[in-house]
Image (cartoon, rainbow, N blue to C red; front, side, top):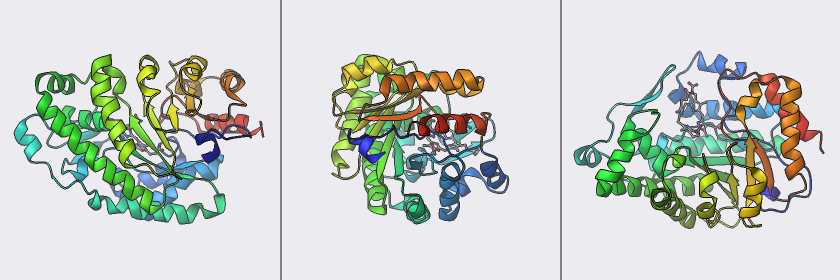
Length: 337
Ligand code: CP3
């Protein structure tokens, strides 16, 4: 995995999947019946157990820390709850200057110590597996969108309204999140992560001008202030296809592609130094085995032999997907060994 992130892999491509720990696993649901989601991400022993569940069940080549991107919002004082079937709901969404003033100015991310303790616990538990631990953080735009919308939204209307009508307020929120994200990633690096991914799930909703200003610029700042020679970085902007000419200049090791993107076209646009991660349509996990296997092999045919390629989905695993399908995908790739 680390070799692939450095574009130096000589073996089969490594494989992991976004949302590889979660509700589709009976082992996860068993714990979830007993604890709330936020309790789980704040309890290092549970973080460790859940992070390792997919590794034990399917043998992915990387573990991703069990946590959530919204913890940076909470660290600034923006409280949220997870409501069943609805997702995150913020108690005091940020709509006005005075809502913004109520947020904490402390961007040290020290109050996320449960994450750093979780990382140490996972690193210890991962010792026999000899695979890297990926840390992660949400990018400022996507985290801001949850703080403004108050939860999940289809079109991010309130977010875009603030961005266009009150650019100064929006800019202050993005800067505050950029600062805390830098501290947060640096503390994750101090705690022992081996690589990290920045998630900007809603980036694809912006036009080219706003993409440069609100996606590229903050991510560039984060990458600049978190650079360490031995810790590779992955950037995932969902709906990346229209923005590759911006993304190709980022100082990250790898770009994670969604499934709408043509992976060979992307390979030609992106510099050789940039690894590619992706990009199976996650809905294929609902397909019959033969179809799923053939579409995995299609991607492998295009990318095997590329020293900078990591197999992943174009987005996360969904709660009603079948563990057998995950196993089939991992096994198909591992058979290449
Ligand atoms: O990938 C992993 O396995 C690592 C852990 C992880 C989670 N969320 C666990 C989780 C990661 C990397 C995330 C990222 C995340 N969280 C993103 C960016 C990537 C993406 O998927 O778009 C976003 C936008 C969030 C915010 C978030 N967290 C939402 C919208 C929800 C609700 C979704 C739903 O389907 O209910 C969550 C909850 C969440 N995060 C769960 C898990 C396992 C489910 C919690 C539960 O058990 O109820």
